[in-house]
Image (cartoon, rainbow, N blue to C red; front, side, top):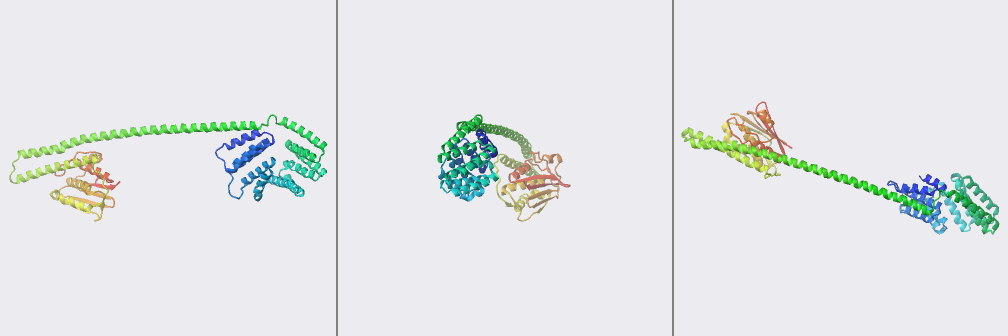
Length: 511
């Protein structure tokens, strides 16, 4: 990019240079070093149309990217050197010398061409101090470097030697320096260097009061200016036109920013619309779930009504009939009382289960963060129901560690394991056996009874199921296992059942 800008500057096409540089600086991704180099290139471009005010402004814009430490980087050295050259061109020699001194310890960062220019400026400061030998020494050193690395710029140096020879009144050397300068200017076809050579020649002739030669220089300058005007008429723009070009570029940048903002707003609007539609979809799903839950509750209510009708109404009716038709005596009295007790117990259990289950459905039973020893709970349940257990002569085999804990409060644990144990007793044969085992997060209750019919097993934990009669025609509410599953789920457990070769097993595990 910088080489292209330099070519346009040599061809007197600063408009193209400014367009390239402005376009580059408008890009988002660029490092500090390249920003500084671009502003230096801007300065060179403005110098080519002698707009030194904008040249200095470009360099000042670049200075804010220069590190504040005392050690000069390559970019800082190049920037300070360019500032010295601009100030030198507008004859602010003290300021130029300040910037020259600032980079004196970091000259290794300059390329050979820039180093030659630096040496040339040093020579000029010596000339100003009338130290002519030092000035000529610096100029010759500069010429040696220029011939190796930047021959096209030799016409910058020979006119300065002409100044020295004018001061020392060495006319032969002056004319020789002039001829050499014109030779390299013609060789590289750089009109501005021919013009500069004649301007320095005329200045020297006036100082030496050789007015005819000075006039010859003026005529040459006039001819060269006309040639330059003709050459630049179609491709050189004025400082005002440069500003207009920059304004167009800046306007385009503003338009691009507005378009980008419009795109961003459009994207945000689309995202907002997508979120809105997503919320609507989620709300519809929520409504659907609520509808399904209401339908489920409705089905459960119907099952409750059916359960109440079958498991509570019928036993109460049986009790009524028994009480009204019998006038028992002796052994018949004993059988009558036992039958009535069984009916009352079944009805009481059904009502208790129904009440507790209703509370769980209304979220009135909350899970409690507690942990209790399981063995005392099991022993208590077996003791409280010893009459029913002894009636079937059931043997319990409880195998679990003494310190085995179950994560629940005492009330819920009693409800869960009472239902499981009495359910096992209900479907066990006379003289049967029930195993209770526990280890880590696994609890199993196994009986050796009639097992579970496969059709019923498939839907055992999918809703209320009608209770089957036990092995001695014991009745139930159908709510027990459903209640057990609900309480376990609230405490972070799951329950499953499977048939074995003899009987079945209920297993409790952590979710």
